[in-house]
Length: 78
Image 1 (cartoon, one colour):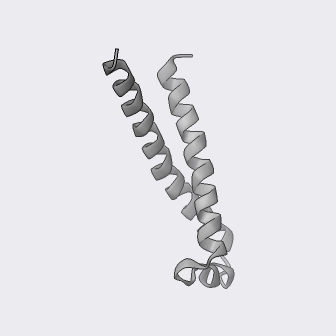
Image 2: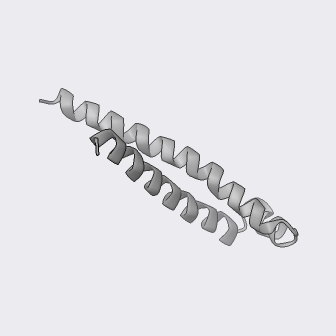
């Protein structure tokens, strides 16, 4: 498997894991009264899933960009 594909998969897994922690903390600390809004809804699972997936996409993109930038910076140092 090419290195860039491994980097992408690792970034996606790391990003979605970080997004899961982020969503859990946002709900736990009731930021913006979000736990109250979600827990009172009949679509709570869908709301949390969408929140997690959208944050996972953003966090994965950041992880991938950071990995590519770090790889480029490492190759410039040689």
